[in-house]
Length: 218
Length: 243
Image 1 (cartoon, rainbow over the protein chains, first blue to last red):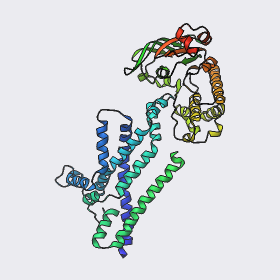
Image 2: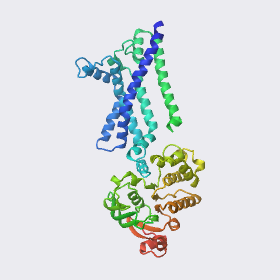
Image 3: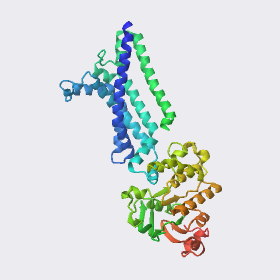
Image 4: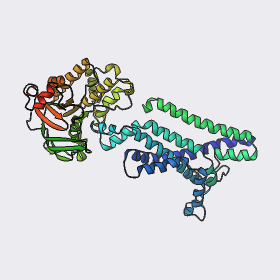
């Protein structure tokens, strides 16, 4: 595999870029949604929570298929021209990561004692200061939500394979490369890619554990 | 000191479902006084304190604060920040004791926060635990920290819900002395809910009795304990079961 070393780093960087962008997008959308859902009470909230939790088990290939149909030449989103591009892969991973961010953030915020809000207000907190403090109290859960979203994104293969097309040097990421190399019988390279994937996930989780124990989050 | 009431409550009714209703036909809280709120568990002391703290709105009746309408759902932040309540089961924030004590000042963006924080920590004897995390504290220590984070704000009104329930006698004395100082130095109005008759007699300038949600009697402390107008008050202060 002489070409493999040259190919490895671009694939790794592309994986980080796609998953990083998806986690960022899903966090921007999902954290405020999770906070709102965690703090508010309305009719149908439990049903909505059940739908979000169902999203945790969303099959990636189904997401990939639906997105493919939407983005294909005859689909309603064809004008975006995203099919077999990084944008489509980021969109797919964002959809898959979003339920993790919303669901875990919602549960963490809801787990903060309801009476805390009254106690903060009696100390002089405004509505925003109250919400911000509650988010701070739920921060370990929010960090966990982002970590789970990253885990979902970086290890996902079905959706990015369908909408990205696994094009060499363009849309090939770690997971799709593993599938390809296994198919070709280059197990050594496939295994090294798989090892890199595991190391990446481990590094991110170690960083989170470190953050949770550090003053940054205390 | 102005002699018009700080709080003026008229015809207050506050019910929780069908089981409980707090009825306060008339109650004034004067500036700079310590009003001891007595009554058995479940009588309605906490409900009354929450009304005074602007945390709940009564079903009926009118509350005025400093001659202005006092509506919990529409309370200006400036008014809310003049009063603070120490809850019976305080919830402390994740982080150190010092962070918890600093919180109220941080909300107000006060510049000399550190000096006030250290002074309050010192007053309540919290120096040894100031750098400990709130999670590692005992129930009594939590109560002291909750009191410290309220006192540091130097409010115009301090609402205390059983603030010394989990404390040893030495700390009870420290708390009573600290609150007495605050009241004398700043003229803070204090409403102090407790079961403890002796404590009310020590700290309050006026005492009130609530039984089963009804305000039975309000009188200057000495009169309340020695010449109560209502026979139920006489029974209560003599330790007889009146509920």
